[in-house]
Length: 124
Image (cartoon, rainbow, N blue to C red; front, side):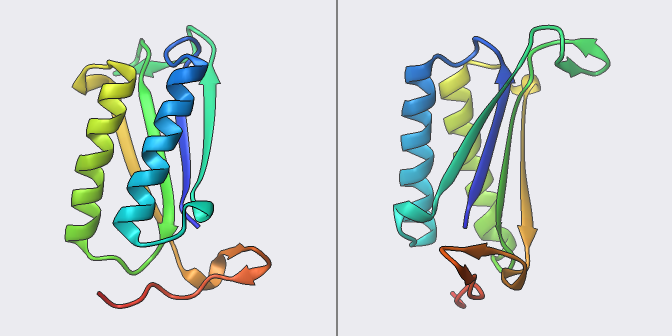
């Protein structure tokens, strides 16, 4: 179920850097959430130079959005964000003011994968 979308200005991440980051994100999420690697999905979206902005100025922000099933604790998500931040900064070389990461949560009943409605998150 986890679905990662990585948005960067074209040229920020080479093909090999994307492949390396996809592997890191997959390993991280599989271990952190205790799920099979095959459930982790990642899409890279490149935007053309001049189409990124920070504080109303043209810039090259790096954005990561991850969609997960609702039900995880605040502590779980804070730690997840911290680890994802480090991965994105290492992969992109972007400064702190150019990285944004967000977690989107959806009820398990509103997600389907492998032809099945997703189960609720198991209590920790």
